[in-house]
Length: 65
Image (cartoon, rainbow, N blue to C red):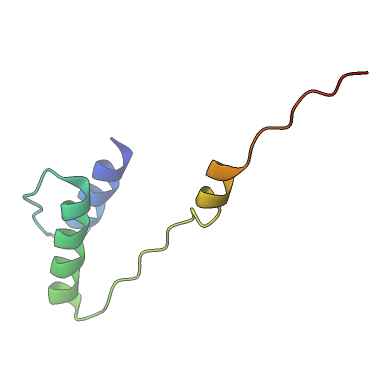
């Protein structure tokens, strides 16, 4: 899957091993290991700010003429 492949990419780039199989836990493991390796904090930006709004908008109803 795409997320796991990106996690593996960053882990290999910094020579970090990720042992968890759960995607969310893999993120935490990757971020913690990156922090310990580099001493720098990690920021994860998620572009889903409009998802709750889109989930609750009803599709337009067809109009009768």
